Image (cartoon, rainbow, N blue to C red; front, side):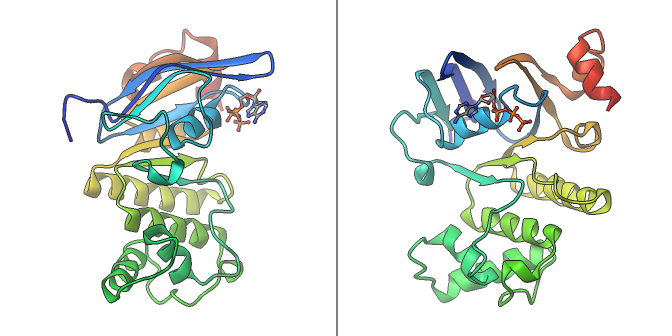
Length: 238
Ligand SMILES: Nc1ncnc2c1ncn2[C@@H]1O[C@H](COP(=O)(O)OP(=O)(O)OP(=O)(O)O)[C@@H](O)[C@H]1O
């Protein structure tokens, strides 16, 4: 990787939904956690979808790890994604769900299976190989999704409210795990959250969205000082 490149660059990337235009311009350096914040409907998921390739910009460009993504399908991008829920196939066991992250054709070598075992152990789920998602708790399912992201070894990890369905104790555990994994692997992490405590305990930087654009992109401490901005003050009061 050329260190001169940001991990993620959106250059005047514009998406139109009918008359609604969302417009993003930002650069995110490699190897930190950026919290993506903003009121409901401000464009947080759309921003992640543009990076992951689930949404294509009508104008502008998305560049990841120094490469333009104009015609690059989601599966070929250097990105793993974890959503709030429904990350797993309910009818497939945990090993198979994670194996899909290595090879969608599921031709898994002994080495691949060993990596899956290691990733499960790393997220605290050793011995869960044969379990199916419906028998897991919400927190366990999110850990399986995280194990799948780990075996993919992609440099960018997008997390769209991954703790939203979890109770506060589980949220704290999952958030600590993400902090540890980011530090170990130096991934570039974008985390959509509605919780100020996630910003305080995890974020290096903050992207604050409002009405389909970036209101503020700042280091965490600078963001926490911006109570002069009503939207930021409202977020920090919650
Ligand atoms: N596929 C789509 N078709 C039409 N409008 C869309 C589509 N996807 C998003 N939008 C609109 O774009 C705006 C931003 O939506 P988005 O889901 O990105 O917001 P968000 O900040 O993630 O919201 P939330 O916090 O509620 O999840 C909303 O007005 C939404 O209705």
